[in-house]
Image 1 (cartoon, helix red, strand yellow):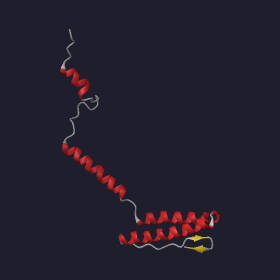
Image 2: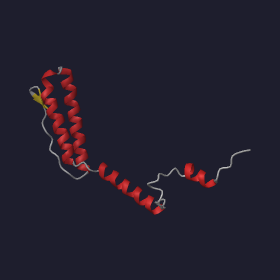
Image 3: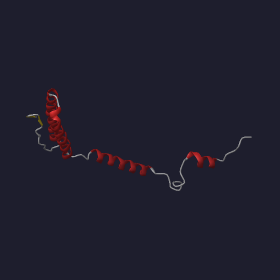
Image 4: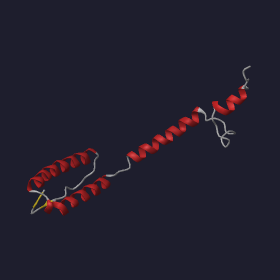
Length: 116
């Protein structure tokens, strides 16, 4: 003869899988879930938009300084490619700044005795 299990036992043990600490809490409503989702989305948007043009300028400055510090160890062909890349980068930086209505000053980058 098959053993009969009460429905209540099945539901308590497997269907909900709720811990004893949350057993007394009601399930979240649709409004609560939507509010939590919106809060998470706004935090993500804040994190994505948190960099300012000043932050980008600091990044560029550190990059240019590192290039200058290491230029003496680079081959002439590498330096020429870097000079071209810096010109393109500075043009893109200016276009991006113009698109956002801010101003940036192009920094001279000294690689060897010549500068970009």
